[in-house]
Image (cartoon, rainbow, N blue to C red; front, top):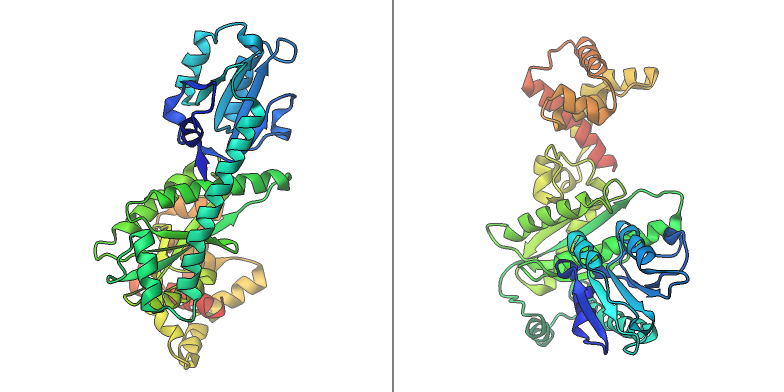
Length: 398
Protein backbone atom coordinates (compact mmCIF):
# COMPACT_ATOMS: atom_id res chain seq x y z
CA UNK A 1 0.00 0.00 0.00
CA UNK A 2 1.52 3.31 -1.12
CA UNK A 3 0.28 6.88 -1.32
CA UNK A 4 0.91 9.95 -3.45
CA UNK A 5 3.22 11.13 -0.67
CA UNK A 6 5.45 8.10 -1.24
CA UNK A 7 5.69 9.00 -4.92
CA UNK A 8 6.53 12.61 -4.12
CA UNK A 9 9.25 11.41 -1.73
CA UNK A 10 10.93 9.55 -4.61
CA UNK A 11 12.02 12.99 -5.89
CA UNK A 12 11.89 11.86 -9.51
CA UNK A 13 13.73 14.16 -11.90
CA UNK A 14 11.46 16.94 -13.12
CA UNK A 15 8.41 15.85 -11.09
CA UNK A 16 7.07 18.63 -8.88
CA UNK A 17 4.03 18.91 -6.61
CA UNK A 18 2.15 22.09 -7.52
CA UNK A 19 -0.94 21.92 -5.31
CA UNK A 20 -3.30 19.67 -3.38
CA UNK A 21 -0.87 18.79 -0.61
CA UNK A 22 -3.74 17.90 1.75
CA UNK A 23 -4.53 14.88 -0.43
CA UNK A 24 -1.07 13.32 -0.46
CA UNK A 25 -2.20 10.43 1.71
CA UNK A 26 -4.62 9.15 -0.92
CA UNK A 27 -3.91 5.51 -1.69
CA UNK A 28 -2.34 4.70 -5.06
CA UNK A 29 -3.52 1.48 -6.70
CA UNK A 30 -1.68 1.83 -10.05
CA UNK A 31 -0.97 4.32 -12.84
CA UNK A 32 -3.37 5.44 -15.54
CA UNK A 33 -2.36 7.17 -18.77
CA UNK A 34 -5.44 9.18 -19.62
CA UNK A 35 -6.29 9.16 -23.32
CA UNK A 36 -9.89 8.50 -24.34
CA UNK A 37 -13.39 8.72 -22.96
CA UNK A 38 -15.35 7.23 -21.29
CA UNK A 39 -12.73 7.27 -18.55
CA UNK A 40 -14.72 5.00 -16.24
CA UNK A 41 -14.18 2.14 -18.68
CA UNK A 42 -10.39 2.39 -18.40
CA UNK A 43 -9.44 3.73 -14.99
CA UNK A 44 -9.82 2.39 -11.46
CA UNK A 45 -10.25 4.14 -8.13
CA UNK A 46 -6.86 5.09 -6.70
CA UNK A 47 -5.05 5.46 -10.03
CA UNK A 48 -2.15 7.91 -10.26
CA UNK A 49 -3.28 9.67 -13.45
CA UNK A 50 -0.89 10.91 -16.14
CA UNK A 51 -1.96 13.37 -18.85
CA UNK A 52 0.00 14.84 -21.75
CA UNK A 53 -1.22 18.25 -22.88
CA UNK A 54 -0.35 17.96 -26.56
CA UNK A 55 -3.00 20.39 -27.89
CA UNK A 56 -4.45 17.59 -30.05
CA UNK A 57 -6.22 15.22 -27.66
CA UNK A 58 -5.86 17.61 -24.72
CA UNK A 59 -5.40 21.34 -24.50
CA UNK A 60 -5.19 23.20 -21.20
CA UNK A 61 -8.95 23.66 -20.90
CA UNK A 62 -9.77 20.04 -21.77
CA UNK A 63 -7.16 18.78 -19.30
CA UNK A 64 -8.67 20.99 -16.59
CA UNK A 65 -12.16 19.55 -17.17
CA UNK A 66 -10.68 16.05 -17.20
CA UNK A 67 -9.02 16.64 -13.81
CA UNK A 68 -12.40 17.45 -12.27
CA UNK A 69 -14.12 14.47 -13.94
CA UNK A 70 -11.44 11.99 -12.88
CA UNK A 71 -11.37 13.29 -9.31
CA UNK A 72 -15.06 12.38 -9.06
CA UNK A 73 -14.11 8.85 -10.16
CA UNK A 74 -11.62 8.57 -7.29
CA UNK A 75 -8.12 9.08 -8.71
CA UNK A 76 -5.25 9.43 -6.23
CA UNK A 77 -3.35 12.21 -8.03
CA UNK A 78 -3.25 14.13 -11.32
CA UNK A 79 0.09 14.58 -13.10
CA UNK A 80 0.36 16.70 -16.25
CA UNK A 81 3.12 17.26 -18.74
CA UNK A 82 2.96 20.05 -21.34
CA UNK A 83 4.69 19.50 -24.68
CA UNK A 84 7.99 21.40 -24.70
CA UNK A 85 6.86 23.12 -21.48
CA UNK A 86 5.12 25.51 -23.86
CA UNK A 87 2.94 27.25 -21.27
CA UNK A 88 2.85 27.62 -17.50
CA UNK A 89 0.18 25.74 -15.58
CA UNK A 90 -2.75 28.18 -15.10
CA UNK A 91 -3.53 29.38 -11.59
CA UNK A 92 -7.04 27.94 -11.78
CA UNK A 93 -5.50 24.44 -11.87
CA UNK A 94 -3.76 25.10 -8.57
CA UNK A 95 -6.83 26.65 -6.98
CA UNK A 96 -9.04 23.75 -8.04
CA UNK A 97 -6.57 21.10 -6.90
CA UNK A 98 -6.35 22.75 -3.48
CA UNK A 99 -10.13 22.96 -3.30
CA UNK A 100 -10.48 19.26 -4.20
CA UNK A 101 -7.52 18.26 -2.02
CA UNK A 102 -6.21 16.45 -5.09
CA UNK A 103 -2.40 16.25 -5.47
CA UNK A 104 -1.48 18.03 -8.71
CA UNK A 105 1.96 17.19 -10.09
CA UNK A 106 3.83 18.78 -12.98
CA UNK A 107 6.18 16.59 -15.01
CA UNK A 108 8.78 18.67 -16.85
CA UNK A 109 8.94 17.73 -20.55
CA UNK A 110 12.65 16.92 -20.39
CA UNK A 111 12.42 15.34 -16.96
CA UNK A 112 11.24 11.89 -15.91
CA UNK A 113 9.24 10.09 -18.58
CA UNK A 114 5.84 8.57 -17.88
CA UNK A 115 7.54 5.18 -18.24
CA UNK A 116 9.95 6.12 -15.42
CA UNK A 117 7.03 7.16 -13.21
CA UNK A 118 5.08 4.00 -14.02
CA UNK A 119 8.04 1.75 -13.23
CA UNK A 120 8.84 3.61 -10.00
CA UNK A 121 5.24 3.25 -8.79
CA UNK A 122 5.30 -0.43 -9.76
CA UNK A 123 8.45 -1.02 -7.69
CA UNK A 124 6.93 0.77 -4.70
CA UNK A 125 3.81 -1.37 -4.93
CA UNK A 126 5.86 -4.56 -5.10
CA UNK A 127 7.96 -3.51 -2.09
CA UNK A 128 4.81 -2.68 -0.14
CA UNK A 129 3.28 -6.06 -1.01
CA UNK A 130 6.49 -7.83 0.03
CA UNK A 131 6.46 -6.07 3.41
CA UNK A 132 2.78 -6.94 3.94
CA UNK A 133 3.48 -10.57 3.03
CA UNK A 134 6.37 -10.68 5.48
CA UNK A 135 4.17 -9.38 8.32
CA UNK A 136 1.39 -11.74 7.26
CA UNK A 137 3.76 -14.72 7.31
CA UNK A 138 4.82 -13.96 10.89
CA UNK A 139 1.22 -13.53 12.01
CA UNK A 140 0.14 -16.69 10.18
CA UNK A 141 2.82 -18.69 11.99
CA UNK A 142 1.75 -17.22 15.32
CA UNK A 143 -1.86 -18.25 14.79
CA UNK A 144 -1.36 -21.59 13.07
CA UNK A 145 2.22 -22.61 13.82
CA UNK A 146 2.94 -25.81 15.69
CA UNK A 147 6.06 -24.65 17.54
CA UNK A 148 5.73 -21.16 19.02
CA UNK A 149 8.96 -21.21 21.02
CA UNK A 150 10.62 -18.44 23.03
CA UNK A 151 13.19 -17.69 20.31
CA UNK A 152 10.51 -17.16 17.67
CA UNK A 153 8.48 -14.95 20.00
CA UNK A 154 11.55 -12.86 20.81
CA UNK A 155 12.28 -12.43 17.10
CA UNK A 156 8.77 -11.19 16.31
CA UNK A 157 8.54 -8.91 19.33
CA UNK A 158 11.84 -7.31 18.35
CA UNK A 159 10.84 -6.74 14.73
CA UNK A 160 7.33 -5.46 15.38
CA UNK A 161 7.73 -3.81 18.77
CA UNK A 162 5.14 -6.03 20.46
CA UNK A 163 5.18 -6.87 24.16
CA UNK A 164 3.92 -10.44 24.42
CA UNK A 165 4.07 -10.37 28.21
CA UNK A 166 0.62 -8.72 28.21
CA UNK A 167 -2.64 -10.29 26.96
CA UNK A 168 -3.42 -10.10 23.24
CA UNK A 169 -6.49 -10.97 21.24
CA UNK A 170 -7.32 -11.70 17.61
CA UNK A 171 -9.86 -9.83 15.51
CA UNK A 172 -11.29 -11.05 12.20
CA UNK A 173 -12.74 -8.35 9.94
CA UNK A 174 -15.46 -9.86 7.78
CA UNK A 175 -16.49 -7.92 4.67
CA UNK A 176 -20.02 -8.08 3.25
CA UNK A 177 -20.38 -6.97 -0.37
CA UNK A 178 -23.18 -6.08 -2.75
CA UNK A 179 -22.47 -6.89 -6.37
CA UNK A 180 -23.55 -4.76 -9.32
CA UNK A 181 -23.64 -5.41 -13.05
CA UNK A 182 -19.95 -4.68 -13.67
CA UNK A 183 -18.11 -7.40 -11.74
CA UNK A 184 -14.69 -6.13 -12.79
CA UNK A 185 -15.51 -2.71 -11.36
CA UNK A 186 -16.79 -4.40 -8.17
CA UNK A 187 -13.44 -6.12 -7.75
CA UNK A 188 -11.54 -2.86 -8.18
CA UNK A 189 -13.75 -1.17 -5.56
CA UNK A 190 -13.16 -4.11 -3.20
CA UNK A 191 -9.39 -3.92 -3.76
CA UNK A 192 -9.46 -0.20 -3.01
CA UNK A 193 -11.54 -0.91 0.11
CA UNK A 194 -8.94 -3.49 1.18
CA UNK A 195 -6.13 -0.98 0.76
CA UNK A 196 -8.06 1.69 2.64
CA UNK A 197 -8.80 -0.73 5.47
CA UNK A 198 -5.15 -1.81 5.66
CA UNK A 199 -3.94 1.78 5.79
CA UNK A 200 -6.35 2.71 8.58
CA UNK A 201 -5.63 -0.39 10.66
CA UNK A 202 -1.86 -0.03 10.34
CA UNK A 203 -2.14 3.61 11.42
CA UNK A 204 -3.94 2.67 14.64
CA UNK A 205 -2.36 3.72 17.90
CA UNK A 206 -2.05 0.09 19.03
CA UNK A 207 0.04 -0.80 15.94
CA UNK A 208 -1.54 -4.25 15.46
CA UNK A 209 -0.12 -7.02 13.32
CA UNK A 210 -2.37 -7.32 10.27
CA UNK A 211 -2.84 -9.63 7.31
CA UNK A 212 -5.31 -10.52 4.60
CA UNK A 213 -6.17 -14.21 4.91
CA UNK A 214 -8.46 -15.88 2.38
CA UNK A 215 -11.46 -13.52 2.14
CA UNK A 216 -11.00 -12.05 5.62
CA UNK A 217 -8.68 -9.58 7.37
CA UNK A 218 -6.98 -10.65 10.60
CA UNK A 219 -5.32 -8.50 13.24
CA UNK A 220 -3.57 -9.18 16.54
CA UNK A 221 -3.40 -6.48 19.20
CA UNK A 222 -2.84 -5.94 22.90
CA UNK A 223 -6.00 -6.33 25.00
CA UNK A 224 -6.19 -3.45 27.49
CA UNK A 225 -8.75 -3.10 30.33
CA UNK A 226 -10.10 0.17 28.91
CA UNK A 227 -10.66 -1.50 25.48
CA UNK A 228 -9.16 1.50 23.69
CA UNK A 229 -8.26 -0.51 20.60
CA UNK A 230 -11.77 -1.97 20.33
CA UNK A 231 -13.24 1.55 20.49
CA UNK A 232 -10.78 2.80 17.89
CA UNK A 233 -11.70 -0.11 15.62
CA UNK A 234 -15.39 0.73 15.99
CA UNK A 235 -14.79 4.34 14.91
CA UNK A 236 -12.48 3.26 12.09
CA UNK A 237 -14.92 0.78 10.53
CA UNK A 238 -17.83 3.20 10.80
CA UNK A 239 -15.80 5.89 9.04
CA UNK A 240 -14.73 3.63 6.16
CA UNK A 241 -18.19 2.14 5.62
CA UNK A 242 -19.70 5.65 5.54
CA UNK A 243 -17.28 6.75 2.79
CA UNK A 244 -19.32 7.59 -0.37
CA UNK A 245 -17.02 5.29 -2.38
CA UNK A 246 -18.19 2.26 -0.36
CA UNK A 247 -21.52 3.16 1.26
CA UNK A 248 -24.23 0.75 0.23
CA UNK A 249 -21.71 -1.50 -1.55
CA UNK A 250 -19.35 -2.77 1.14
CA UNK A 251 -19.58 -2.98 4.93
CA UNK A 252 -17.52 -4.80 7.50
CA UNK A 253 -17.74 -6.24 11.00
CA UNK A 254 -14.87 -7.17 13.31
CA UNK A 255 -15.33 -10.34 15.39
CA UNK A 256 -13.04 -10.65 18.41
CA UNK A 257 -11.73 -13.79 20.06
CA UNK A 258 -10.73 -14.06 23.70
CA UNK A 259 -7.64 -12.51 25.32
CA UNK A 260 -4.60 -14.70 26.01
CA UNK A 261 -1.20 -14.01 27.52
CA UNK A 262 0.79 -16.85 25.96
CA UNK A 263 1.39 -16.54 22.19
CA UNK A 264 0.77 -20.27 21.85
CA UNK A 265 -2.90 -19.55 22.64
CA UNK A 266 -3.42 -16.86 19.98
CA UNK A 267 -4.63 -19.54 17.58
CA UNK A 268 -7.40 -20.32 20.07
CA UNK A 269 -8.44 -16.67 20.01
CA UNK A 270 -8.62 -16.86 16.20
CA UNK A 271 -10.79 -19.98 16.30
CA UNK A 272 -13.14 -18.36 18.84
CA UNK A 273 -13.60 -15.36 16.58
CA UNK A 274 -14.05 -17.57 13.52
CA UNK A 275 -16.77 -19.62 15.23
CA UNK A 276 -18.86 -16.46 15.72
CA UNK A 277 -18.76 -15.37 12.07
CA UNK A 278 -21.86 -17.36 10.98
CA UNK A 279 -23.75 -15.87 13.94
CA UNK A 280 -22.74 -12.22 13.52
CA UNK A 281 -26.07 -11.18 11.97
CA UNK A 282 -28.08 -13.08 14.59
CA UNK A 283 -26.37 -11.86 17.77
CA UNK A 284 -28.41 -9.33 19.79
CA UNK A 285 -26.94 -6.03 18.58
CA UNK A 286 -29.50 -3.20 19.05
CA UNK A 287 -26.87 -0.49 18.55
CA UNK A 288 -25.55 -2.10 15.36
CA UNK A 289 -21.98 -2.19 16.66
CA UNK A 290 -19.19 -2.92 14.19
CA UNK A 291 -17.01 -4.75 16.72
CA UNK A 292 -18.46 -7.89 18.34
CA UNK A 293 -17.01 -10.49 20.67
CA UNK A 294 -18.04 -13.56 22.63
CA UNK A 295 -19.22 -11.26 25.40
CA UNK A 296 -21.84 -9.86 23.00
CA UNK A 297 -23.58 -13.24 23.14
CA UNK A 298 -24.47 -12.81 26.81
CA UNK A 299 -26.13 -15.94 28.20
CA UNK A 300 -26.38 -17.44 24.71
CA UNK A 301 -22.73 -18.49 24.74
CA UNK A 302 -23.47 -21.11 27.41
CA UNK A 303 -25.65 -22.95 24.91
CA UNK A 304 -22.54 -23.88 22.96
CA UNK A 305 -20.56 -25.06 25.97
CA UNK A 306 -23.00 -27.83 26.85
CA UNK A 307 -24.00 -30.92 24.94
CA UNK A 308 -27.50 -30.95 26.49
CA UNK A 309 -29.58 -28.37 24.59
CA UNK A 310 -32.79 -30.42 24.37
CA UNK A 311 -34.54 -28.91 27.37
CA UNK A 312 -33.87 -25.35 26.21
CA UNK A 313 -35.00 -26.15 22.67
CA UNK A 314 -38.23 -27.77 23.87
CA UNK A 315 -39.05 -24.70 25.93
CA UNK A 316 -38.41 -22.37 22.98
CA UNK A 317 -40.39 -24.61 20.64
CA UNK A 318 -43.45 -24.50 22.92
CA UNK A 319 -43.10 -20.75 23.41
CA UNK A 320 -42.96 -19.97 19.69
CA UNK A 321 -45.25 -22.66 18.28
CA UNK A 322 -48.27 -20.42 17.60
CA UNK A 323 -46.14 -17.73 15.94
CA UNK A 324 -44.28 -20.27 13.81
CA UNK A 325 -47.50 -21.95 12.68
CA UNK A 326 -49.09 -18.60 11.78
CA UNK A 327 -45.99 -17.42 9.87
CA UNK A 328 -45.81 -20.69 7.98
CA UNK A 329 -49.51 -20.75 7.08
CA UNK A 330 -49.79 -17.07 6.08
CA UNK A 331 -46.30 -16.22 4.76
CA UNK A 332 -45.87 -13.56 7.43
CA UNK A 333 -42.85 -12.50 9.50
CA UNK A 334 -44.14 -12.08 13.03
CA UNK A 335 -41.00 -13.50 14.66
CA UNK A 336 -38.76 -11.20 12.62
CA UNK A 337 -41.04 -8.31 13.57
CA UNK A 338 -40.62 -9.06 17.29
CA UNK A 339 -36.84 -9.11 17.08
CA UNK A 340 -36.57 -6.04 14.83
CA UNK A 341 -38.86 -4.02 17.11
CA UNK A 342 -36.65 -4.98 20.06
CA UNK A 343 -33.38 -4.31 18.22
CA UNK A 344 -34.60 -0.81 17.31
CA UNK A 345 -35.35 0.17 20.88
CA UNK A 346 -39.13 -0.31 20.60
CA UNK A 347 -39.27 2.59 18.14
CA UNK A 348 -42.16 2.10 15.72
CA UNK A 349 -40.64 4.42 13.10
CA UNK A 350 -37.16 2.86 13.12
CA UNK A 351 -38.48 -0.71 13.22
CA UNK A 352 -40.90 -0.07 10.35
CA UNK A 353 -38.09 1.44 8.31
CA UNK A 354 -35.85 -1.57 9.01
CA UNK A 355 -38.63 -3.93 7.93
CA UNK A 356 -39.49 -1.81 4.85
CA UNK A 357 -43.15 -1.53 5.91
CA UNK A 358 -45.47 1.30 6.95
CA UNK A 359 -45.71 2.04 10.67
CA UNK A 360 -49.42 1.11 10.56
CA UNK A 361 -48.47 -2.32 9.19
CA UNK A 362 -46.00 -2.76 12.03
CA UNK A 363 -48.61 -1.87 14.63
CA UNK A 364 -51.04 -4.33 13.01
CA UNK A 365 -48.42 -7.09 13.28
CA UNK A 366 -47.77 -6.31 16.94
CA UNK A 367 -51.48 -6.50 17.73
CA UNK A 368 -51.71 -9.81 15.86
CA UNK A 369 -48.86 -11.19 18.02
CA UNK A 370 -50.69 -10.12 21.19
CA UNK A 371 -53.89 -11.78 19.97
CA UNK A 372 -52.16 -15.04 19.03
CA UNK A 373 -50.24 -15.34 22.29
CA UNK A 374 -52.85 -13.84 24.63
CA UNK A 375 -50.36 -11.40 26.10
CA UNK A 376 -49.47 -7.71 26.11
CA UNK A 377 -46.14 -6.72 24.62
CA UNK A 378 -45.59 -4.01 27.21
CA UNK A 379 -44.88 -6.88 29.61
CA UNK A 380 -41.16 -6.56 28.95
CA UNK A 381 -40.14 -9.70 30.82
CA UNK A 382 -42.47 -11.75 28.65
CA UNK A 383 -41.33 -9.88 25.53
CA UNK A 384 -37.66 -10.49 26.33
CA UNK A 385 -38.39 -14.17 26.89
CA UNK A 386 -39.90 -14.40 23.38
CA UNK A 387 -36.92 -12.61 21.82
CA UNK A 388 -34.50 -14.89 23.67
CA UNK A 389 -36.31 -17.98 22.37
CA UNK A 390 -36.15 -16.70 18.78
CA UNK A 391 -32.45 -15.89 19.04
CA UNK A 392 -31.61 -19.17 20.78
CA UNK A 393 -33.16 -21.17 17.93
CA UNK A 394 -31.39 -19.06 15.31
CA UNK A 395 -28.02 -19.34 17.06
CA UNK A 396 -28.24 -23.09 17.51
CA UNK A 397 -29.17 -23.73 13.90
CA UNK A 398 -26.86 -21.07 12.36
